[in-house]
Length: 180
Ligand code: UDP
Ligand code: MG
Image (cartoon, rainbow, N blue to C red; front, side, top):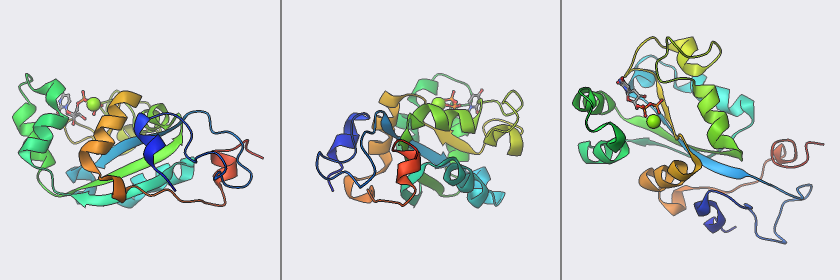
């Protein structure tokens, strides 16, 4: 199956005629990038965090370890380049490999940000990953793309096209179809 339609961040997953049985219309299917930070690895929270996304009904379409470089982080966190914590943030993110994940679902960029919670874990809503398991920045466990446009850029930044997988699940009709 072609993945090309994903790259716009919008639009149907499956080309006309190749849609799985039971799926008639997938209005706002998106992909978003998640990075599980070094504190998630050190604190044995990788499985717990991934499980939350699985339980929500988001589809994991890519997953791998990434050894981040200073160069990659300078690009990824360019909006923070003038902050006093920029260098220490990059050092933190290079302490161990991170787990890169691409999630797919209807409106998933916003859904994932809600599940992740606010940047400062002490201000994050209870029930979010950051509120439930962390206390401080930069060690707030997880990165998630903050807009549909940034999600497209960030998925491309960390994943090659052939590392992204389209596949059918028997639950697709509940999570991508009309829910019956
Ligand atoms: N960060 C930090 N100190 C701050 C703000 C942010 O160390 O005062 C770190 C924190 O790990 C955060 C990351 O920089 O997750 C990226 O910041 P951003 O504002 O993009 O927040 P996010 O999108 O991760 O919620
Ligand atoms: Mg951000």
